[in-house]
Every structure is written in structure tokens, then in C-alpha cells.
Image 1 (cartoon, helix red, strand yellow):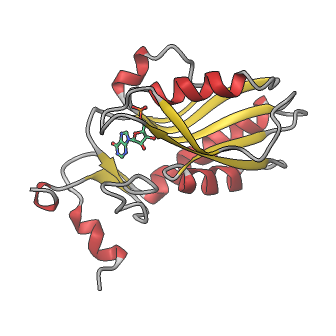
Image 2 (cartoon, rainbow, N blue to C red; image 1 turned 30 degrees about the horizontal axis):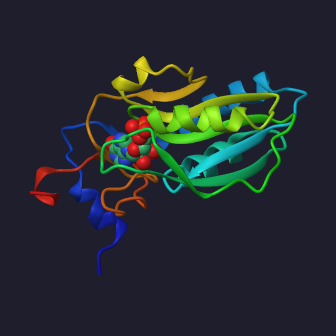
Image 3 (cartoon, rainbow, N blue to C red; image 1 turned 30 degrees about the vertical axis):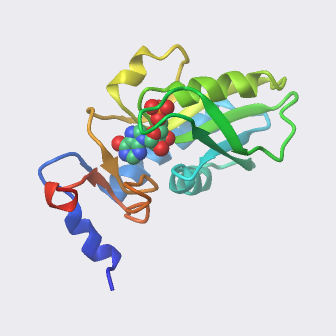
Amino acid sequence: MVDAAHIETDLDPTALNLSESDILGRLKEIAGQIDADYEGKDLLLVGVLKGAVMVMADLSRSLNRHVEIDWMAVSSYAGTKSSGVVRILKDLDTDLEGRHVLIVEDIIDTGLTLSWLVKNLKSRGPASVEIATLLRKPDALEMAVDVKYVGFDIPNAFVVGYGLDFNEKYRNLRSIGTLAEHTYS
Ligand code: IMP
């Protein structure tokens, strides 16, 4: 049996590491900003499956207000590198007409998927569409869409944990880190 305590040892201790308390502390700060920015407005949080599950759970529970939560599942068409061509696997259950929408993301790399998503959601007549992401990589800074809330800007390395996977594994790690070389070589 492999347990979560064991899989922590697959992370490279010398590379980027965000502990559970680093993550929760930062999400609390962002939640405070969201509480202030959306005061008096209704708010719909939209998560993108599967990576955003943990961020959604902790960010939404740090808010001191009512929110609705809905989910989309999308898949990028071509290979491992994001192409920006997106297919909806599961659409929202909610009508966005007149709603304030906040997209909740785990990580933005190239931002291609997200640019597509913002355009798609804006075409549905919402009052506003903004983005909150826990992590942002350097390439995302060249993205045309603005990201209103960013947890951490991180270097250009592949990270896992806290919802983020490598071949569908490591999503259940409480912390975020870089895989040690022995795990994939
Ligand atoms: P983008 O369209 O290039 O921004 O791709 C974003 C998606 O790629 C994220 O939602 C993740 O699913 C995945 N991704 C990008 N970087 C990483 C990483 O370092 N670890 C795990 N998944 C990643």
C-alpha cells in the first residue's frame, strides 16, 4: 500500500515547495480580497475539473459570504502542449446571464485554455468574468486576459500536488512540489 506520507518523498526537497499552510494562508488572503471586491454582488465560482477541486474547496470555505459553485470539464485537443483548441466535456448547469462569474483555477501555464474559456463564458451574457488562480507560470504573463487574483507566481517547472497531477497521480498530496528525478527516470 502506498500512502500519502510515502508519496511526499517523491518530491524534490531542494526545489519549489509550498506547504499546506503556505497554500491555505495565501488562499485566506485572496478570499479576503474577494469578499471585499464582491460585496453586495452575487457570486458564482466556476471550477475547471479536475485540477481546481482542492483550490475550490479551500478558497470557497475561506469566503465569508454566500456563493454558488459550478463546474466545467474541458479537454485540449492536441497532445501534451496546450493548443488552445478546446472541447467541452461537461458544461455548466448554471445560466450565466447577469451573473458575476469568478473562474477558479489551479495553475495557468500558457493560458491558452483559459483564454478560450473566458471568451466562451463572456459570450453567455454574464455581468462580469474574472479569474482566480493559485499558481501562475511565467508564460502566462504574456496572456491577453487579465488574472485578477494570483496565489503564487512560480518558475517554469512541472509541479504536482494539491489537485495537480502527473499522469493522474499526486492530486491527493496536501503540498505542492516538483517531482524528484527518480520518480520519472
Ligand atoms: P495552459 O492552457 O497551458 O495554461 O494549461 C493549463 C493546464 O495544464 C492546467 O490546468 C493543468 O491541468 C496543466 N498544467 C500546466 N502546468 C502544470 C504543472 O506544472 N503541473 C500539472 N499540471 C499542469
